[in-house]
Image (cartoon, rainbow, N blue to C red; front, side):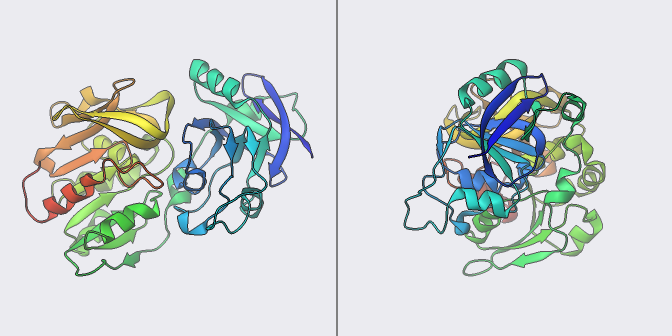
Length: 356
């Protein structure tokens, strides 16, 4: 098998074996702690511009199941300790290495992912290069930045998804890199969903006469999305709004808040989140590198959820704006599903019930 290297922007080099597509892969190296769900991870558009590293040591053991894909694969590379070449699952259609090759994703296996994770936790997220020859000049690695991710991840034209069963409400979903299961979670609750490109104007959104507005997840620095934030400023307060992940951050920015980049982010399916209103703790799926500064919106929002590990903001209620947002993923597939009730809350808001 072909010798390959993972070069970090601090000069550290890890030797491994080539998997996936040929060629170099340059991106922001991040780690995710999920023990399952590697397909949903690889097809989560929020990973645009990033090299994904799985902390769980064996990846690919249940193969590739296209029905589980969440969206386009926009990652720049893939890093695993061991890649399973002989998957066993009745739903599997082929091996993961073929998926990586077909999607042009270069990868490396046989590296010490525990050591890499410790480096990122201590030094913070950093850029990296997957390559066959170690470069002598690290300038290209060090200067890389994830830019234009939302435009890359978003749909380019509207799509309508009918409700399952009787149609109760019509939802406009602004697609910043939306995962399919957000749409499905709304459809299951009787919502007709119109998925709109990220650059849809506020006027065009309101022309659809939706009962509610969904703000999706997506990649990159939320502050980069100047046009999208300006449109949300016009929409807030006009209809019920539910934001997830990047949508949570953009809503805060539109209402005068601030966001910051976290040292290494939250990525995985086991993030604990505490509801400050009830005291209950939920296990959640997350994938983000930025967070809302709760103090920056204290005059207009109620801090509802916090991360039980680092106490960062995980959810906000904006009663006057008829809006609530969360940093985690209540639609999580393959799970956990602890917070799926938030979609019911959104549906209740569209029905005119109080902001609970």
